[in-house]
Length: 147
Image (tube, rainbow, N blue to C red):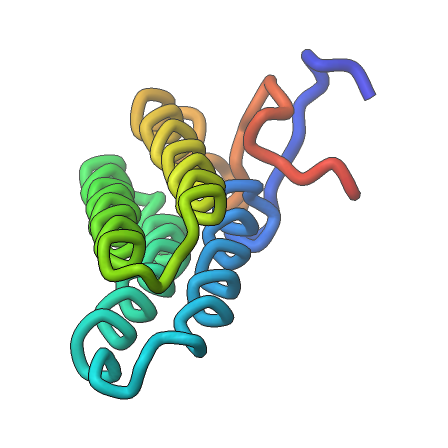
């Protein structure tokens, strides 16, 4: 497929950023299973909630594409959630529940998600107001390679 070929996402599930957000949520959940019970209602729940909310906010942004400002607002919420998740990952490191390499890998993924969300905000016009509910995009950076 040529880079300049038009691609259409039929669902938020087609967005690479959404797929990456789900992967980070899965990884945080798996890691947090090893946190002590006394962290159950603080670090564990907060980190799980924020990591899961990244993808949820992206899905909500998708639903708001008819209104560019609403779309951008929901993406801003997604970015806030990924930053909150970075905080909880750092806390897990500080408490000794997470090794530095694992922390660095998770933070790197979260930062990539943040950059992708920012690119979507910067190019909101490509996502909003498209006929038949599809995204108009000339680059492949937003879509999974397995289509």
